[in-house]
Length: 310
Image (cartoon, rainbow, N blue to C red):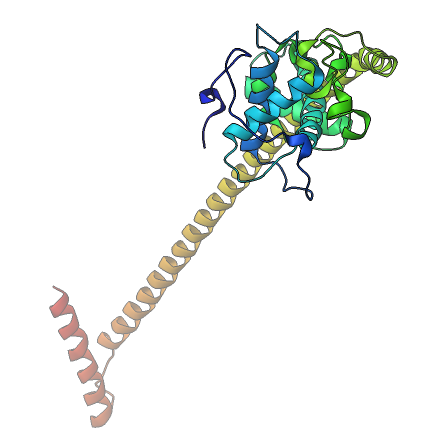
């Protein structure tokens, strides 16, 4: 994948390649934008909007045409995108990236020690999901835009951060407007400090009013996670202690069983020795010939075994 940093930067004085005007291109709804196309669109917006020579002297239609030309020149996805599709996609990127920047501001305002930048991003994504009920999937765009004035202004959302829909914005011959009128959406790079509207002002006031509550919610949530982790660790320690006790009990039980076996063995040996002693001490004088021969044979076997042990 070609990095967006490697894409060339050109101003109005540089002549872009001859490309068909996108406003005349018609077709069916295209495929979803890929990560590479999103990054290329952001790069096109940045290269065109921060042009020091002509960024403030472009009409809205001219600005959008240049963004489209830049995008199509370096687009290697094989998808043909119209100005309308780029405008719609940029509107989504701009809106959600601004909302995510607001979530990042609230997370950073907590000033918790020992938290990495990646932890801040993860917490901001969780807050975004909590507030907007949908996941933030445009981190690749935010990483490219987070240092731009429009997206770094975290004290409140400007009107420029709410791009128009294709239906509410004129595109083509009737959408140029007056000279220097760069509009919003893809053209908002020409005027980043527009006054905020009524809806944005109300949202800004609500955010300020609830900022403390959000901060307290995040602190409580992180404390809950820490307490849950500590309880889980304590549970694991208790389980290990139980296993150790069970092991000691098993070893003690095995030891007792071995001692029982040894006692039974010694008891049997004692009984056997007493029986041998009885046979050796047997008085055979009053026995019959067969009985006397039987005991004499047993006595000989006992003596032979004792001799072999020695």
